[in-house]
Length: 121
Image (tube, rainbow, N blue to C red; front, side, top):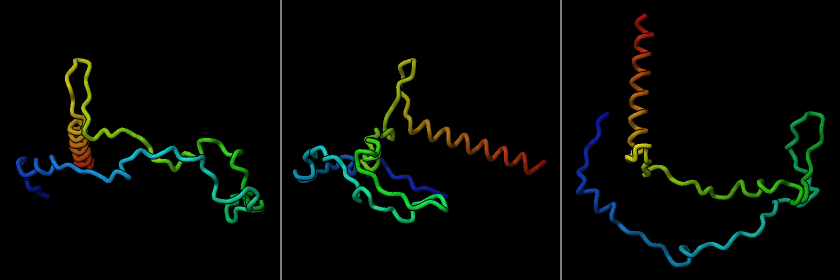
């Protein structure tokens, strides 16, 4: 597999591009109202029984479900580590993406060496 090297001067205009969105999309969203279930309490939930001889479960009122259940479909606010750097104890910065790439390459070489030794013995 070969890769074509792209000069940095041809990439910089792409990196400097600015993007904008309409004001309605950029406005902060109001906090969503309390989520409600898709079916009313007492509704039989067909084909959800896990035991052979037991009847299908029945939906409960929304207040009987745990609070974390209503947050499962929310977008996670996880920070992106793709372009971050980390400071070591000595104070120098380390590029996490480059370090991960180097570790993967080292691991790949170790696996290849191990497989070669297994095949020759």
